[in-house]
Amino acid sequence: MIKISKSTRLTYRLMDENDAELLWQLDQDPLVMKYIKDGELPSMKETLTINIPRMNHYRNPEAGWGIWQVNIAATNEYIGWIIVRPMNIMLGTPELDNMEIGWRFKSHTWGNGYATEAANHICAAFAEQSDVERFCAIAIKENVASVKIMKKMGMSFVKEYVHHDPLGDWPVVYYQMAIKR
Image 1 (tube, rainbow, N blue to C red):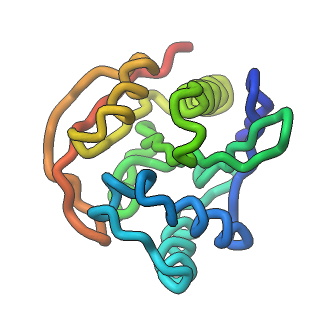
Image 2 (cartoon, rainbow, N blue to C red):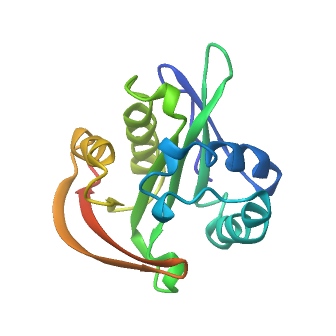
């Protein structure tokens, strides 16, 4: 079972269907959703009928797959999440040695290095506790903040392509890095 310990400033917990309210609240910020689903803010009904079933599709506590809640350790404030799942799992062709990592954080916390700290910490935990060989991340090209995090993590640009997902197809950039053991 993958365990994610506290990092310098942050704590982590694997989220589940009981966290629908937290997931929905984060997605109500237009700045957070600017590059996701064309900026559309989901209703609570969509969170319950689409987002929670999607999360449950790939959530695997033993493997550490899912959405990891991120809180500020000093205050226990929920500030966002890091997702870890096999690349292409939503298409039914999971790459079990290549984990997709992604993030979503409340806009008032941006610029503090929380996403980079959390993503690096979670990648390090997987490197120590699993057989994962690579981590990858995708983003809309114009989402320069996310691309910057990918580069800070040590990821390299691989390609630009149209990413297929049951929710739609989006042109993205794909970055990847090998696990360092």
